[in-house]
Image (spheres, rainbow, N blue to C red):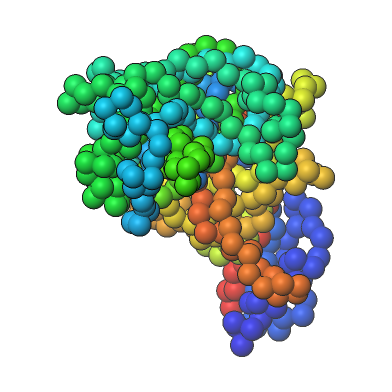
Length: 479
């Protein structure tokens, strides 16, 4: 009987409006001997900006470029590392079918290039940028936790005497004819030409990197049969570092090495190519370099907090002890709702960083474990909220689980960041099943947001900061 009445009373809480002093809500329908006391109360919540620090660098997308956030004035640089993979049945053309030969009859590539394909970009597509491409000396291995500050140059991964190419570019490649760029089949890309002479680790010199790959295939076709052999025997990968310019950044979805040669077709020759790709099947990492002094100055501001990505600023919220102490210490917490409102960006520009679309709330001391182990929100100790453009806010409808977690920790004399939770911009990967009324979208992966985003949140003031949490309690009345 008590269980039935408990759910009846709690349900009534959500059907009856209440203010900050609401008490004994909806209990008139319950028999006197079995009465359930239900209360709703609200509390001020304190908040502050904190440095995100080095975060897990797992992402399905790479980033390359440099931008300045118009709101926070923080300068963010993204450098990109990728490996290349081959399918188990990868085949290059047989030697007798290749018309591109040197004076000694050996196969050569007429040209070679790396293309970094992207669909989404930030900033001005005509901003002049400059990068340097470095050949890796050894593969960056799988199975190791890498953060967004991982620098292949500083860690000694760059091959001495290896391939190194400087390239100036704009995201809108004006060197391509209009007929090519306006084609429906055209995919936007950054093109790095590898036409210069290349010397391998054995001291052999080739007219370009493509010729090196073609001849290695002739010598060791087994090294092109799987990605592990290819990475360790032939090509460990490349690092793309921004060296000059600002104003644009691209989301790199795929890297591709194209090797061009002439192929025999009867008595004629036809230009052909073979390719190697860098995708999710092999390791890709983005190294972010932002101005830490600028970030520290933002953290010192009052009247608001920040959310910024990548690897920028999180907002830390401290849940007050009053929620579980005092007159409510013997009550069950049934629900706890908090709405975090954004502050409108007064800097009007088409190049403003967007507001993070999804944020994650979880205990401050659980961040590393959550992302390292690629966990999902459980709505008990980790919660997702999506930006609501109508209310210009994020709404967490029920975070009672995380409050109960802190309550249990206090009763167990556990120390640490009790009551502290972090709001973190995240990216979601989802799958959708069914259709119509049966359509369902499921989150399959949550990762730190690597794209550019920034917003201010109300809070971080000494009085009336506007950040409050509403809690609903219940307890069976003592007989």
